[in-house]
Length: 382
Image (cartoon, rainbow, N blue to C red; front, side, top):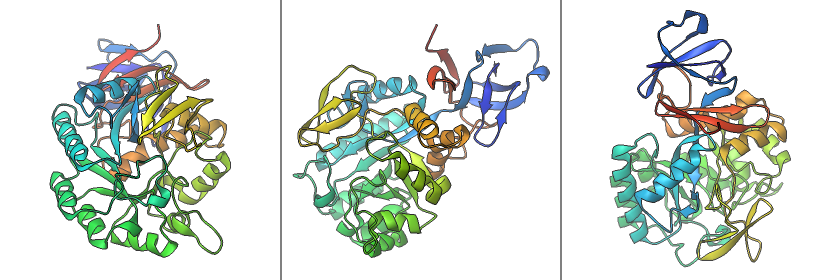
C-alpha cells in the first residue's frame, strides 16, 4: 500500500489539490486530504504533476514499430502496451483491420490467451472489417472486403465480448441479423467504412449499432439533401463516436462542432500505426506502403493510412486547438471510452474500487512524466 501525493488529481468527476490517492496492489482504495495521511505510509511524490485516469484507446493498429496485422502475437501486444505507457495509455483494443478468416481466428485466439494474464491491459479485440463498403474502404485491402459469412460471424459471437469487444462494419453491407447477433452477444458494434444513407444508418442503430468508427473519415458525409452516416450519428444522442483529433483526419472546427453535438458521447481514438514511438518513415498497411511525413501517414496516392497520434497529443489538441476544458478532454480519453465498452465500473475514474491505472503529466506542455500501471508506478523522466 502507498499514497500518491503532491499532484493535481483529475478524478473524472472532480479536481482535487492537496489530496492523496491510497493504492493497494492494483486498486485505488481511498482518496483523502494529504493532511490526514498516516505518517508511516509509503509515498509516491507526484512532483506537482497532473494525475488523471489512464487513457483507453479503442482503435490501435500498432505502435512501437509493430503492426498487429503483421505479427499477431503476444509479443506484439507487449510492445504496443509498453509503447502506450509512454504516452499515458494503460488499456487498449488491438485493432485488426480487414484481412482473411485465418488471421481473424488467430487474432481471437491470441487475445483470448493474453487476456487470461492481462485482462485490463488488452480489453478485447477490435475487428475493423472485413464487412465494409468497397466505396469507403480507405486504406483497407479491397481483396479481403467481403460479405458477412454466417459461419465466421457465429465464431465471433461464440468468443463473445471477453475476446471480441468491438466490431466495425458497414450497416448497408450486412443483414440486420448480423448486427442483432453481434450486439445480442454483448459485442459493441460500430458503423464505419460505410456509404450508408441516412435511413440505412438509422436502421443500423435500431438493430444494435451503438458507435461509429473515426467520425467523418471513410463514411458518407452530412449533406443538405443527403445527411448520410454523419448526419445519422448526429441525430442520435445515445450513439458514441470515435474521433481522430490530429488535425489531419478532422479539421479542428469539425472537432468543435462534433463536441457541441455529441457531448459526452465523443471519444478520442488514436488509430495509431507503427511509427508511434519510433523514427520510422514508412510501413505497410492494407497491402500498401504508407509514408509518415509531416505528422501524416499517407500512401503514394494520398490516402490516409492511420495516424501517428497518441492520446496525450489528442488531449492536448482538444485543449489547445479545440478550446475544450482539460477535464473534459481527459474524460474523452478515459471515462467515455470506458462507458462505451460498459467497463466504467472499474476503469476511467480515480475513485475507490477502480483500477490503479494513472497517467502523470505536465499540464503546461502535456508531456507524460510518470505512469501507474495496475498499481505499479514509475517515472519516465529523471
